[in-house]
Image (cartoon, rainbow, N blue to C red):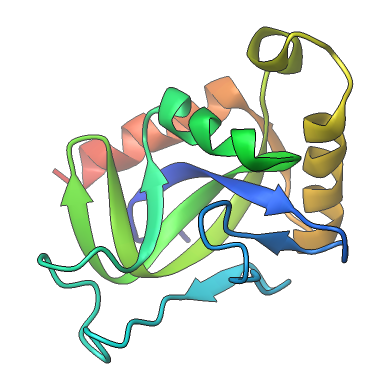
Length: 150
């Protein structure tokens, strides 16, 4: 059951067959789908408003898409867990849990049906053993979820 806010984020597919943060590529996501942020400033009280630490996600598909420019990436639907900071079109949290892999419209997003991002998407399904959902379904779930957290 989903209790936290939902959002979209890109996950970078790396050579070892794993997934990393597109911004902090040394941060490898565990296969169980849970990521726990660490911060030497906030320590056990993250994320604090005055810091930039945490697991980030957006409700805006265009924001998530920007982060796919670092290499072959999958878009995931992720739940904020633990302490969080909410923003107009997204959030950052102490922990993030991958709920589903998002099947984006590859041709519209990248100009071709098949390529490195589609391969990364299929690899993400296998890596995390999560369902593949359409972008429209992900957006509907996010809208409903955010309405419930007003």
